[in-house]
Length: 65
Image 1 (cartoon, rainbow, N blue to C red):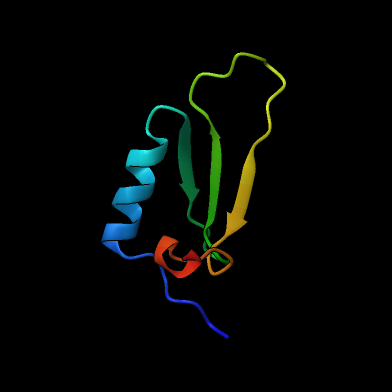
Image 2 (cartoon, rainbow, N blue to C red):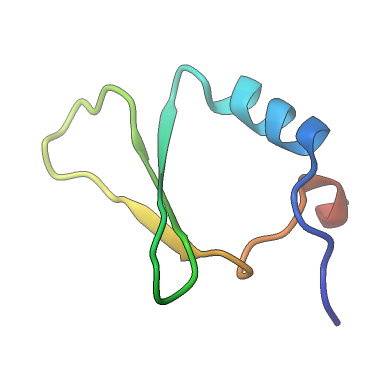
């Protein structure tokens, strides 16, 4: 079942919730889906976990309720 894409309200809520903890970078690609990577804004440990997802593999926050 397809899920709705992020809308502006979902993106604003996610940005507010993560503003002090995570940063995001979206890499646009010419030959495939864009890739969004989340990473710590100020990691305490230099060995941190990063999360990347291709466009279309994530869902709107409102769809998770």
